[in-house]
Amino acid sequence: MSVNGVHITTDKVLTPVEVNGLADYQRLVGGYIECVEMHTHDNVFLNEEGKLDRLPLNSIATDILLRIIGPYDVIVGDVVIVGRSDGQGEIVKDISPEGKRWIKLVAREAGATFV
Image (tube, rainbow, N blue to C red):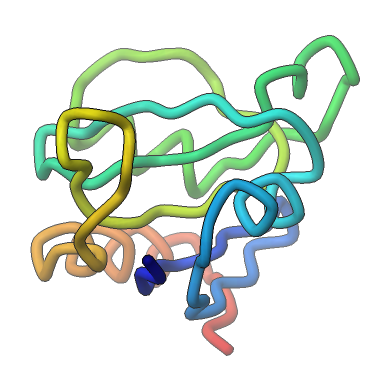
């Protein structure tokens, strides 16, 4: 099942994406994936080994998680944010309107580029 989300790079470029499964998530984050669920019920997929690989800081993703779920960890590498899962690990929804609002707010403040 494909879902729509937002790809956020460490270069502060935000791009709408359509994700069609594991291979797409891995391509977008550049490796094995880890998922963090936000209180908006959206999910952030990031590179599971990003810190081990010394990937650069993703300041936008870090700030989004800080504002939505509170103090977290710093996020490194590119991420993709999509909607909610079915509870079995399958993402079944596009990114939520609330998630989009947070992304736009943080990105604008950071001077990010929307593609």
